[in-house]
Amino acid sequence: MKDEVGGVRIVTDEKQTVYSVPQQSVPIGFYAGGDWTATTTANWLQLLPDHGEGGRANTLVAATTALNRTKAVRSALVSITSGGMTQTVTITQSDEYAVFSCDTLDMTAEGGKINVGFETNAPDSLRLYVSSTLGEYLVNERDSAAKAAGSRVMTQTAKSRAATFTSRLDWLRLLPNTTSYARSGILLLAIHDKKGLRLDLDTLHIRQAGAFEEK
Image 1: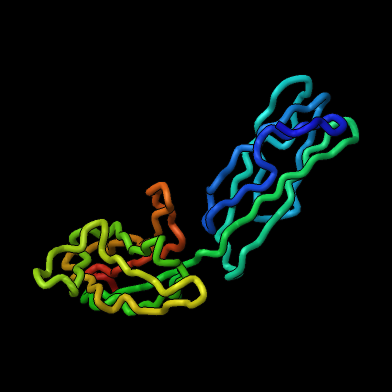
Image 2: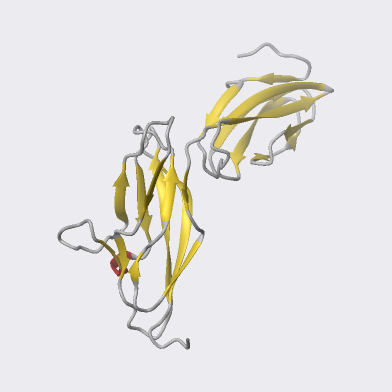
């Protein structure tokens, strides 16, 4: 526990790290002698709540609102002020990233290969994989049995952190849409963190035309 300075005493770590994904959050515990406010230097952090009453223990949550697409580690300060006195906490967002070469992909009713690239610097310790909501309509052609891809369609070990890895998803094939209606779904590039939690890094939206849509 830190010594109290002015009206604020931080009771959790003053330096914390989050992954390069949105909706990563860390709690910041502190004691404020009077009413307090919290601010941050970053537009990729959200503080909830950002003010409150003093005289008791408090916790605010610093949550990421965006991917870190800078390809470099970045840091921000969270400042908590009470009675004219301020204490700061440093939040660092790591630089693991994986991005598709586009955000959306329109496919004809005939289907075909998912001809989209991606780039990542995820290290070997964080296995990169692609998941899909397209279910039985998406086939992994690397699977000799040609089974439906299901929810987990690829695992790819990236290069070391110092290098980037690029590839394409042209081994994924979308089956023909024989219905009258368009169908849509998403592909996700994701990693598992050290606790085994899935962290989604980027999303590709796919729309496939219906067989009888007007051209």
